[in-house]
Image (cartoon, rainbow, N blue to C red):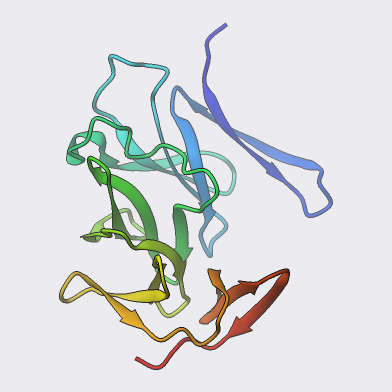
Length: 193
């Protein structure tokens, strides 16, 4: 028996719809594009001697493999840049862009954006910022130790902004930010920049 990976797609009712066989590539994050195709990043940890491979894969709605992008050799780290982060998302499709939080250097994460053809648009180190929301208009917000910040793509800096709500930033819905305060979820417009 050969070990491998895959992506299981279910209907809203919980019925199995499709299985996408990814071979020796092990997906660790999945996001759906507006055309219902599937983007995933992951690794080939089942092939420890296989050091260069593409960490981002694209599958069409029917499960056929469309392409692979972001070579592993482009990340100066001993860790796998496409490994799973427990408790948080790492991959989103928003508008006409794909955004991913990947390990770019030892003990650091970088935010990478690509177009829907898999071409890299930019790569920014996150420092202590953890990208949490990638809004429909393309703004990236990060959770900080205290507060939130927004990515300034021109300078590569994460600029602090005043949170529009006092809870913990969980993500986004369209252009609204979603916060949690206790057990209450609140959708709020983004802060003025």
